[in-house]
Structures are given as structure tokens and as C-alpha cells.
Length: 114
Image (tube, rainbow, N blue to C red):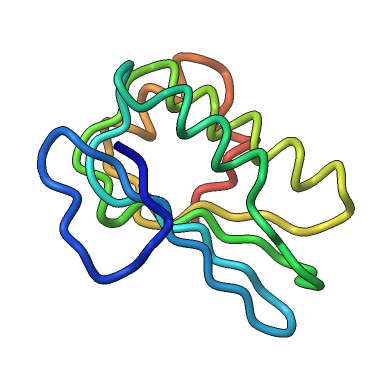
């Protein structure tokens, strides 16, 4: 289950995506577990995220409890799309494991860990 609503606990096997846009920044927050069961929904949600007029986008992984390799790659693709649109991009709150997986996959620089 993927949700774009805020305020609910997605539980151990679910992923929620929250998008908050201000005048100059959009924060995309992943909450819960990103795995094979949520990959298609994560892909759709990131592809359709309304970034509004923001010049900067931040991917917040602080509440991400698990991420498989495919989800790390999808986040890196999202970062590339954001940068390709002329916006700045940064990732915050990633666990050491997610950072290591990104390094092994060769996408660490694209994710711009803060």
C-alpha cells in the first residue's frame, strides 16, 4: 500500500510518500518500507510528484525503515529527473546501509547525501 496522505503510520510492510511544497523547496518523505511489494507504487508516486515552483527538492529518508536495491535505484532515478529539470537535489536521513548500497550501485553522488 502506498499513501500520499500524512499523519498515519504505514506499518512495517507499507510505504507512505508525503510531498510538501513551499515557495522554494519541495520535500518528498518516504515513511515505512520500500521493497518489491511497493516498487510500482513508489515509481508512480515519484513520477507524478507535484514539485510545484520549487527550485530545490529534498528526499527525506529519515523514516524509511527498509529499502531494497530496486528502491535505492528508483530514488537515484528520481534525483536524476529532478536535476534534469534544473532543480537542486539532496537526500537526507539515509541510514548507513542505504548509503553503502548507493555507493556499491554507483549512485551515491546522484543521491547527494546531506
